[in-house]
Image 1 (cartoon, one colour):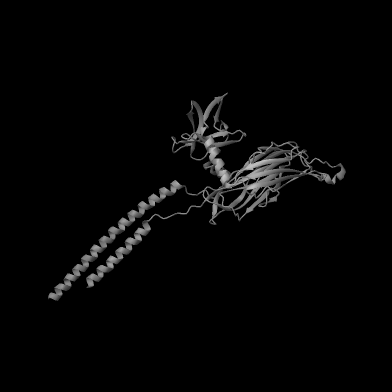
Image 2 (cartoon, rainbow, N blue to C red):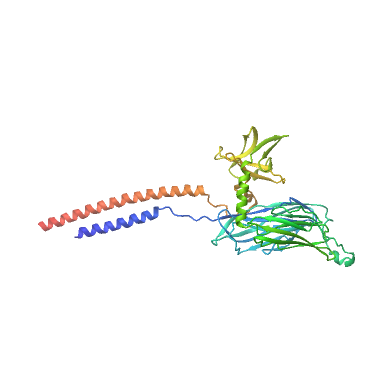
Length: 439
């Protein structure tokens, strides 16, 4: 009976050990911090003193819905002054606070419009200041990277707004009554008809993802005041955006943009149709007057990278033969035969950026992956440079599984040896007891 009791204890211990080993050996889930990117862009690579221009701040995440944005934006107040930025943006004197801590949308991309007025000639940079806090929908703060842009302001220091109020220098009767605009641009779609200072009514159609219309403008009179109304919180269907120009003498003129925002179904149907229309677009490479041109739906010129630190980490310069033309490209050092190449190109707007070319699909698209991290490593704006990649995670997980399996096997052999020794001892003891009883 005593021997049976010992065997039961050994069996129970063995079962408990195997259950514990199985739990430890099971691959666990590792939570990775979601990442976000802040990207500044502008259609105006340069502006004249007195011009008002718009900088778009795009906050996007490929991993999660963006629930909140809290960031500080730095600009050089010696060359520009802040005009407006919507209800989420405040500040002046070179520092803006973008505070949208409780966004109600379920989108992974958020846009903010930052409007500035050029006040003096020179080059001014716009970038993130301090560590931004981008919150995911699960409440966790995402690791964030960002870029910086430079705007060249042209013109003499005497152009643009006067340092003093013209309305205090002259009586109202002698002040300018010029309340017209000489330029008006929107960030989405195209105005219909094309802008003209004397035309005050326009139509604009946008897709369902557009919530706000960002407007860039220049007043004919530098002393005029321009304000916007109705450009935020667009709804499906009809919307009215007003650009109100107030002349120095107080007279006003309204430029009205009738915005038609598509419903979700309308946008989906249009995109499907456009996708079908684009199936026939071909990709071509041409050498013209010593320049290499890439052509699909748009035209690009392959140019040299001006700074070596702009090249994404892990890529090396090479030359590939595409359609009989040698093209300078950059390929991953670890996979020189990859179907994906990077090319540094100038687009039709004159902006130079890296583009990713797919050899199989013959497509070209703007590259924003490792390049952004590389730029921010130089600028010191990466807030979480040690985020583990998916490949590294899989490799580490496989190594951990092998180690755990080896440990479990060793433990099993050790337990078997211990049980064998224990059983021999019990059997020997039982034999001695039986011999004593026989005696």
